[in-house]
Figure (cartoon, rainbow, N blue to C red):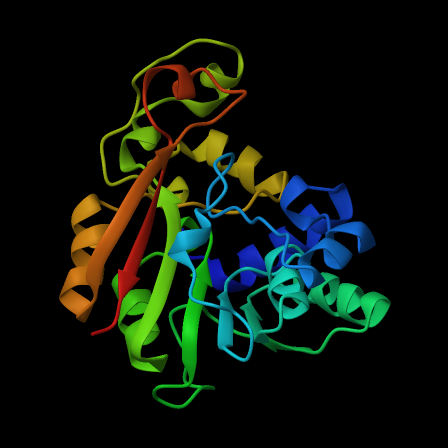
Amino acid sequence: MTIDVRAYNRAAWDRQVAQGNRWTVPVTPEQIAAARRGEWSVLLTENKPVPREWFPPLAGRDVLGLASGGGQQAPLFAAAGARVTVLDNSPTQLARDRQVAERDGLELTTVLGDMADLSAFADASFDLIFHPVSNLFAADVRPVWREAYRVLRPGGVLLAGFMNPAFYLFDFPAAEQGRLEVRFKLPYADLKDLPPEERQRFLDAGLPLEHSHSLEDQIGGQLAAGFHLTALYEDRHRDIIIGEYLPSYLATRAVKP
């Protein structure tokens, strides 16, 4: 089956906004006011806040929210004094960021685009890239790391969250029902590995298409792009049985030397 995954996922995430997915709900005016006082916290994964020591001082820094639309992280960074650009594949997710900016008097720029193609930006444009769990929607993650490296300035920081590839071993509907069943070989992709009838139900439901990526591509890909990895932590799903047995997510801090 041939599908334009980027176009399909754009429409799928626009639907997620309409359905109130938790990653599409903007921050509140109270959170923006706190960020202006220097009190803010953001997520790269599902539950663990990113350590504040992972961030450079934000005031006056150029920050790219990479595939991070939704009105959550970028407005907080802007309220903390950063010059913020958000790139995302979903126009409706980007609209969330603009809504918060207009509501709270913030300046930020939104760009519709592909996380693996940052040609809209010149070399060495940013001091910080914030890339929460989203590269599961890309078929190939290594171009994401190469482009991130290119647009960061020397000494710039890449903060990234991504799925533990072992998560995709398991049957997800069964896990939602509390049963842990090993089903798939890795690397996994919805289009490639779901049986035709199940895949069609998935597409009919308009769910975003996902891909697993090996640690060789997620972590090794950052190293191959030229990054120096400086920190890492793990995180777990709260409401799915998989999280009881293994970390579902990883987050990394990497620096461009």
